[in-house]
Image (tube, rainbow, N blue to C red):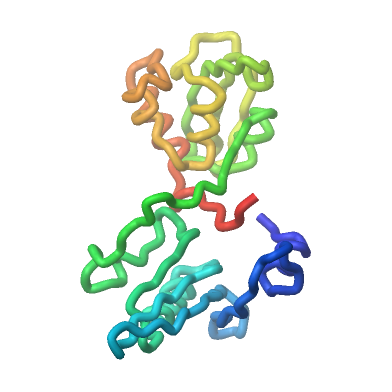
Length: 229
């Protein structure tokens, strides 16, 4: 997901909303051995003291990395900033490995109201489902209910040896029935079909269909969007 020019102007203080105050963050980039940028972090520190003891909070405003090594290095820097007692990351990825980097993983506490910046509404099912990859050699027929009619019907999803998919309308029996909202939750790998079945949001029409769908739609990382829109 790219950031347009206005987004970068907001993040650099070049364009502010009326009444908005700007505090220039500290910004670091991580480069690999070849000099290529693999990550960046931007943060502010409030410099607070309590009873003559440093009690500062470091707030991460941006943390993006394209490799695990870059993410670990950026976190190592954040965890080493002097006089900081707390680190707040309002837009952290849901499966960020940070807890595993600490001697006490319980020191990480989720915010009471995590940001929810990713919404998905499927309009063209073949285009959406063939835009991602899957485990090879699987087949699943989905009966999708869509009151608006965009993706309503039975769709056959077949995956090839290279992980690509073929999605076609199908007149045969379906394996799994669900509505467009439930399928959108599955599409990016952020939900499991077996959980949807347990919640009554999907129905297994053939035995093992939910488990097969779990395998099909699983992704290595959870979907995450750090930008508000």
